[in-house]
Length: 105
Image (cartoon, rainbow, N blue to C red):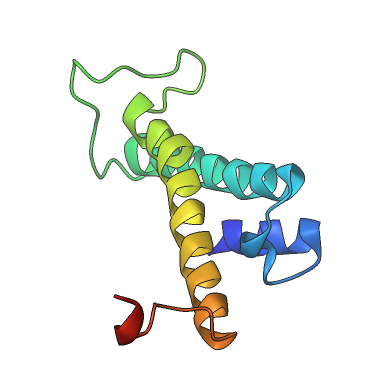
């Protein structure tokens, strides 16, 4: 959620996902990556809620697991793509250019 609002602040609109600029997308991703690094560090080093297994690749300096970071680098762009498609579909339906009529099928 914080990532969404970071993108909105950069692009100055809550509808930034409909037409994201690179800077808004970068703010969205950077916020998520930063939150992941901080929360993973707190959970593993400060609160000791869990620890990474011996086979989990971690970043050398930060010690953050590679899998949580990759989730933030791969899933959010996919999420934005899905939301954009949903918004475009809703706009098409609202303008009357939605699904073809039964006669057209």
